Amino acid sequence: MNLESTAGEHVLKRRIGIGDAVFFILGNVIGIGIFLTPATVAQQTANPYLFLGLWVLGGLIALAGAMSSAELGIMMPHAGGDYVFLKKTYGLSTGFLYGYISLLFSYTGSIAAMATAVVHYQGQTIYQTLLPIATSQGWDFLLPDPAATVFAFEWGGEVAYSVQAEHLIAVGLVLLLTCLNYLGITRSIIFQKIATIAPASILIFIGFMVLLQTLFLDEASWDLLRQNMSYTSPTDIQFSGMATAMIGIFWTYAGWNVTLYLAEDIKNPERVIPISMIISLGLVTIVYILFCFVLLAKIPFTEMIQPDPGDLTARAWGSLFGDWVGLVISLVIAFLIFGGLNTTILSGSRVYLAMARDGIFFNQARKLHPRFESPYWSLWVQGLVAVVLILVFQSFESLLKISTIFMLFLSLLTISCVFLLRYRMGQEHGLMHMKDRLLYRALGYPYFPAFYILCVVLILGGELLGAGLTYAGTAAALVLFGYAMYYLWDYRRRKNNTRPPV
Image (cartoon, rainbow, N blue to C red; front, top):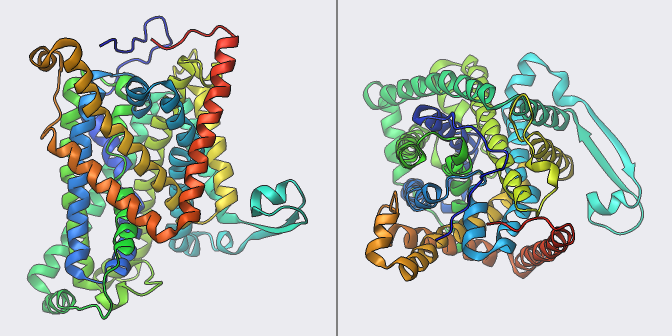
């Protein structure tokens, strides 16, 4: 099989080892999700056993996806991750579709969602303590056409539009971390270690203190845990509700594939990629499940399933250490999310770099900074789109849903590449020779990839079923529009005699 070569291109230097890769994955996975989605999962399941079971299932889905896609990353260790895999498997048009959705929805949507969430939720504690004006300041004004059409999805007239100080803080955070990555991956690695090691250590220490206190010292916590586990929901569990719960869990585990996007930056990728994924996901799954047990031991399940249960983390840990812990925990969580933002900004820029190399994105995006060796043009385009999403959608929930739906769809296509590429290699070289050509084979093949695909299809089906035909039609229209955009870019590439991808 003729795999992609980056010879003659602006090639990134391989500086990331196993330890760095683990920090990038941990920083990208452990973010705002685990502190917000448990309430949503509890509300949708209304069953404590199902509540815990779905978090275990989420870890297994993530592990299945990681072990399957690692084969692709080692086979094609270039910048761009899923874009490179989809391009090689389904053609340049599907690769472009992935990049288009990443730029407009999934990657930039995740960046916008994390920035909005950390400012809004953690900011409620931080601002009220350190900077009260940030929670109250806002500006209202009217937008005429055509801006009214873009922001309010209405045609004609004027629409009231409001910008709060927290939205501008989220914008500033995105631009600040984009600037950090503009200064090169070495600075990004240093920041990632600082934003992951210190806050994660504090968070794990406090978490184990809570767990030990719950298990060995606090009889009341045991009583509450037993009471919560015996809770019976008065209503039946809906399939669409399960899908909505899994949407949040999927987003909370998302980020395990970050090393695939950084494969061109990784030293010895055939060793680093699978090992870093296994270590990171093992740690993350254990931490998530222990965290959910702590919530069940500290907060009545009847309160967790309420429409607005508040900050469950601060409530659970504040019951032990007092109100002051709320500020500490909020600061720790904020730093962890900064790490996730940093990793997402870093890895997303590699997608547009790969697209530009193939002539289906702005040619400037293929360039690396002469001094910092960063894809600076890609970074700033991505950052500006994320800023627009923050100002348009403003709500964390809206950003979460739109980004995760597309992430699920794209990950489904990516894992299917494992089957198709193996089939093609088997046809070209024979089954025995194919095994010799693979530096790494997906663990549990074909069961792990099939398990991942089945779970994602069920989650997507349940979510679209609950959302109705309008939601599904909108998603389909965006996909079709993406293909139309590809043919415009392809026409431009051919007209300018830009070389086709190898």
